[in-house]
Image 1 (cartoon, rainbow, N blue to C red):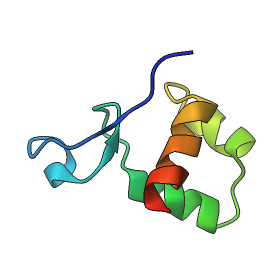
Image 2 (cartoon, helix red, strand yellow; image 1 turned 90 degrees about the vertical axis):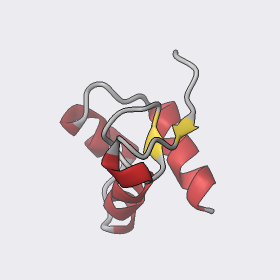
Image 3 (cartoon, rainbow, N blue to C red; image 1 turned 30 degrees about the vertical axis):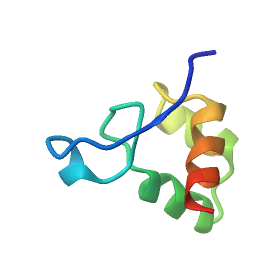
Image 4 (cartoon, one colour; image 1 turned 30 degrees about the horizontal axis):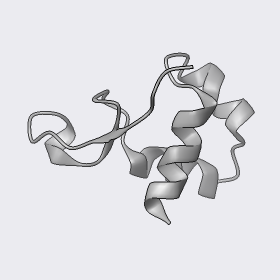
Length: 62
């Protein structure tokens, strides 16, 4: 498991909070969960993410 972190870079996704510098925003993950997707459903769609990334995005949003 890798160390997950929320990053902010004005050059990546307009500075929105992202998962580990990737072009996956916290808002996108939170939106998927709010739409009813489980972590198990999200991970196959984004194979470069880990369950810890989803948890951290939700913790950050809370």
